[in-house]
Image (cartoon, rainbow, N blue to C red; front, side):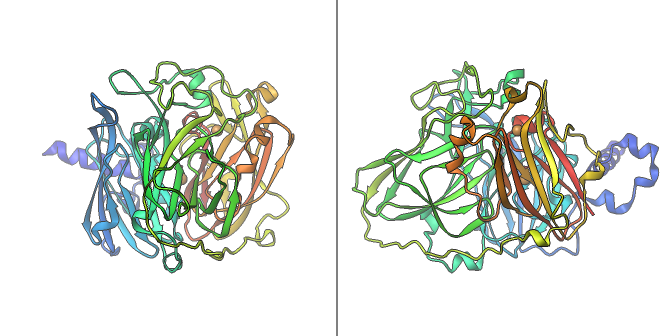
Length: 524
Ligand code: C2O
Ligand code: CU
Ligand code: CU
């Protein structure tokens, strides 16, 4: 009994993100409000929907033969619309589907052999509901999230965000889709239901027993993990069986660090209808899509002219990742998709679309999809002096403005006044050792509200890395992650409305993130 009380107390303290030692030194830090963060449901929050998500160790069938041990999130709707959650057969976390304006309460139960926490990538939620690593819970503990969906319709996702373990946790399976709909989107004639398909692309390595392999070596960390087996929705050699009609495909790069240069093998250009933060104003035509970790693109694919029995393959084309690039294979893994791709920027198949049914549906892609209010430089709090974030790599560390991640370490330039629009710039101009030698692409992500890209400046436009992927960038619409190639400076306008507290910014190459390429912003 006594033991129980202690555990209870420790639990509560844990939620406040303050160590017991710190509390002993500063007893004044203990106050009722802090102790309550995430530890139980609040009385004044009336959810439309209540969900439980449990992280557990499971065995799933990925290949013939032995099952694969994965870390899986299992979901259940406790109250409200049962369709809000679809449990996936693969290692993926359940797909969550909610509507703008809905209030959700999520009980995260940790039954994993590690502390962990989930973050809602791209969603604008209160700081304490954002899954900051300081809120990680231990095995046996529960974290209660409560928030309203403020985001517009879009393809968001969620994943583990545990201090120094994010890469490993996501790799083990802790990630899933979080799809938001809204009235504006529902009023459009876009493919729905079974014709609206979320597709997450990931790369992994497996051993002969079909078990996940994760090499935590030094070189791997610097470059990021690259797996030899491509999986789509947790499935190797993924095939989509379709009818002769239009589809809405929602592509998510859920890989730790691999960048994809996606194209159809028959040369058909893409009609891109959405990005990270939902629909674009109007469809954009692109020959290929550069998709960095955490980024999303929604495409409208018209298969009505195809013959039954025909196939098209989505490939990732060759490109140069710039700078020193990715040298050396990962070794070990089991070669999928013809085997052996191990470098960034190699050519390989991602998924196959097989036309198997004739339908007579005539689908027309709407010319106008949405209205996006362009953020204006004149409205920024700092139109003349962007907040500059330099990206650099050193021996075994990846840095933002020369700093490594540390909890409770907000610096002066990391404090942002609430309800302001900020001009920010990510500078990947070869800071750190060896000049261009260590130039690496960094997909930069900010928590909180979505932002807009203002401009890209390139030191060397003919630089191989940049020119081999730049036609695949899509900087329109709302974004939460933007790829910054070596030698590039990307300027954004980022709103900080509504919520005060800590919101992170980091590289979404998860190995870089865990190596320290992550910091907190304090909005106040
Ligand atoms: Cu998807 Cu802090 O990240
Ligand atoms: Cu995020
Ligand atoms: Cu990075």
